[in-house]
Image (cartoon, rainbow, N blue to C red; front, side, top):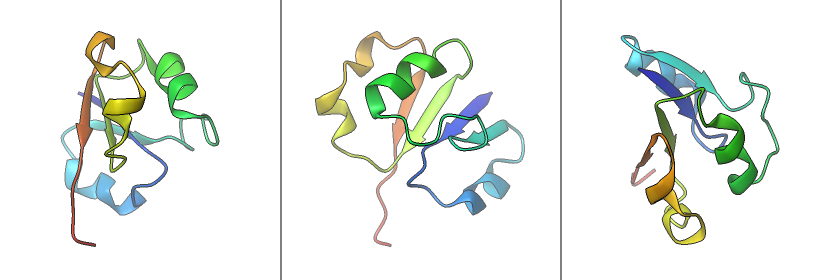
Length: 76
């Protein structure tokens, strides 16, 4: 599975997803892009977008994206 980690997530999260092809937004060359643009350019290149931005589902039409969106919730 091709996983894209949002810029707001720690890069160290990659080591916990060893069985997948994982890139961070900066590694993919998309650093600094706003969510809408980022999701458009990622379409076709990823299977899952992972973020901690809980507002994403209210700001973007995630139901029509050609990939899954995982929003992580953590205490710290």
